[in-house]
Length: 315
Image (cartoon, rainbow, N blue to C red; front, top):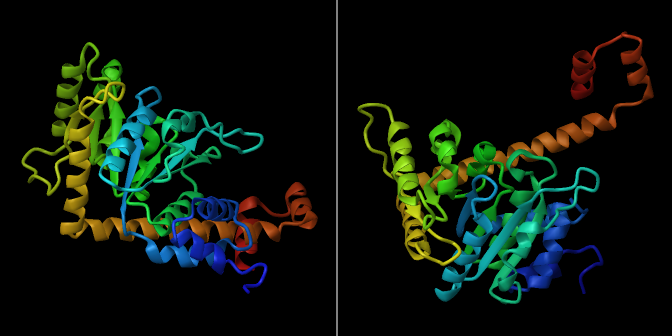
C-alpha cells in the first residue's frame, strides 16, 4: 500500500482517464501542494503529445461559444477534449469568477470532456506558471485535444504563444476599428484568425480587412512563410464555418508535425516553463530572507532596494 503522501496512486488513476483524479491532481499542481513537484515530474513525460489550441481575442468576440462548437466537432470525431478556461480572478481572494465556464456547460456531463477554470490572478492574458502544470495533467489524462481559452484582454494576449501549439485569434465585424489598429503582437503570434459573428453586417468587409492587415504585416519582397495564417469566417451561434475552422486547425497541427517548427515551439514552451519555475523559486527564497532588520536599513537609508536585493540574491 502506498504511503499517505505517495502520489503514485493518483498518477496511475490520472493515466487511466479518471476525471476525479485529474481534478484532484490539477488542484494540487495549481496550488503548489507538497505533492505538486512529484506529480509535475511524472506528468511532464507526456508533454508535447497532443495539439494545444490557444483561443484568444478581445472580450465579446464569442470565444467561449466558439470553443463549445470546437468541442462538439472533436467529440464527433471521437476525440477526448481537455479545456482550461482562464477566468478573471478576484483581487481579494484570487479565485476565478467562472463566467466563461458556464457558457460551455452543455459539455460538462460528457465523460469525454474535462473542463476546468483557472484564476488569472491578475496576469496579462491570464497566464501564470500554473498553466503549464495544468496542461501536463490533461496530457497525462490522455486528452486528444487541449483548448486553453484566455481571459480576453485582446492585443496583450501574446503570452498564449508560449503555451499553445496553435494560436487562434478571434475577432468580430463589430471590432473593425480594432482590426485596423492591430499591432505586431497579435498579428505575429496568431496561426489562424477568425472573424466570428460573420453573419452580422460587415462580416465580409471584416474578413477582407483582416486578410489585408495580415498581408501588410509582411515586409515587401519577403518570401512566403511555410505557414501563412488563414482567416476563417464563423458564426459560433449557428455553427456556420466551424467545420472549415476545424480543418484549418488540423492542417496547422499536421504542418507543425511535418516541419521542424513543431519541435521549436515545444522547445520554447519548455524554456518558458523553466523560466517561470526559476523566477518563482528564486523570488520566494530571496523574500524568505527579508527580515525586520533589512527593512529598518531601508527605512534609515543605510541601503537601497537594489543593493539589498543583490545581497539577498547573493546569499
